[in-house]
Length: 96
Ligand SMILES: [Zn+2]
Image (cartoon, rainbow, N blue to C red; front, top):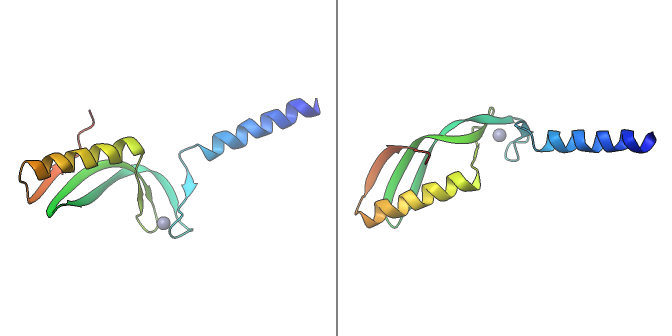
């Protein structure tokens, strides 16, 4: 019985760590939760602003945490903009 109880406790704390709520590592006070942010990327002299980027955002300092999939997509889009000769562009993030 003790073994079963400790197993349940471990799985609960794991769920909590991977959940939607965590403390901000920048200000260490805010809570990071799902939301949207605006990001500016500079690549080779081009400036691309992405609006409505899905991210986890700190409710205190505004630091945005991107998933690897989202940040990779943003970088790829910025590279395409550079190749297209864009100098300044403002666009909405489009999830594919
Ligand atoms: Zn913060």
